[in-house]
Length: 611
Picture 1: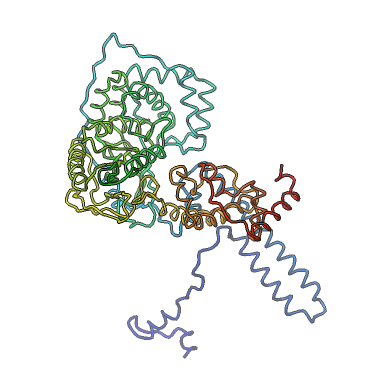
Picture 2: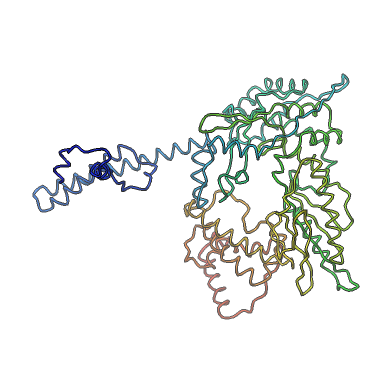
């Protein structure tokens, strides 16, 4: 039968013999994995030659020319290894060069693949991209705002010092815009011929015009973790702008900031100099501590404290340009700067790539991530919310678009009443500026000092919200007892995962090249009280020890005494000392005494550590 098939017996196309022949001719693939990045045709040829030489060498061990066959095999293996090593080096150099040309391309995806278990590719389908862009960049009414120019108006020219200062704020490694000009090249041109750029920027200020070329933005979509790839909320949008336009934005930013900084609300901690998330968290925590500290509940000073966090849907991309212009006018921003903002908002174009070719989308609202002026303009518009007249028991604390409502009252009924009134005013203001609250994402925690934990039910629009045992506010867990036990557990788990990932990326030599804020020490001055309990220290200490071993480039069997000697103190102890919290006194036993003796011997054997 096999011979007949090989001879090619004629058969009908719909016959079983014809179908069986087609199945028999299908070659089943055995290699289901993609090739390694350094594989090429040369290596494939050398590998075949090496395998052939190895087989001849193994089969000719008892022959007279066995030594010659063995030498040929070793030479073939040496050539193969050399080719693989050379290909790996070449691919690595190409990857490094690609970082400079395409920041969000293959190098970014390679690193994110190592940091995350699964990476979601950026969408290229035109219909899906249109759906995502329409949701992330909603269309709004056309900007209709005209500003007359008065003859007596003086426009301060841009000086060379101001230009170089704005130029210095541009990072050398930041991704360029559509023009593709590297930042380091543009900065070199400005330093070489600042007069040319001064003429351009001064002309823009005089005419109140923001060049149309600098209003074209390239879209980059970054996936948000493990979310459905077909949902617009699964992506974070970045708008890449030309660096020359960013420098003009920086010049305008400085002048607007100087005009409005003293008029902004004090309870806005986002995008402002000398303020950070820790200041906002500290204000909330101190308010809570003052509330629950006191002598007694009945006829005393102790009260309830409610902390509720509000979330805004697509906040920055939904800001109305008309509302921003009204806020600028209300804060007496000079006319020539307002004309620049009107021109800055007019005829903005968003460009993105699809599998069917490049597309364009007209932008009519929002202050997007990637804009230099975006954060400042957001603060100016958002200032209206923070200056609302609220009940005396309520106050707002904001960081960018994140708002915390802090309510202090003696009775739960009062907290309910004050929250309803405060939420109604916030909701009306949001609707007036075109923003929408994500009511289902509102969280609240009721902080008390009573032995029995109590909860409260709030009405948030169409939803009923029951206070939780803890909430996360700007990266810090605030619980009903203000003990921060959940915070210690959370940062220990997170830091352990980060340490594991970094240990795979970094070699065990010399530790990290830069000092960066540790995940474990974020907000440590606020929640350091949790380290006074043995339970929290027991969770935190192992992570610190493993991190210290990475920093000191030590093996895991290295004793804690030697590690402490190298570091002069363990990290968790230095953290406690930094926050001026004494470690609990321990009873000195034989084990502690021997550890102290061993540490003394280690310091004597390590002069550099003891110095």
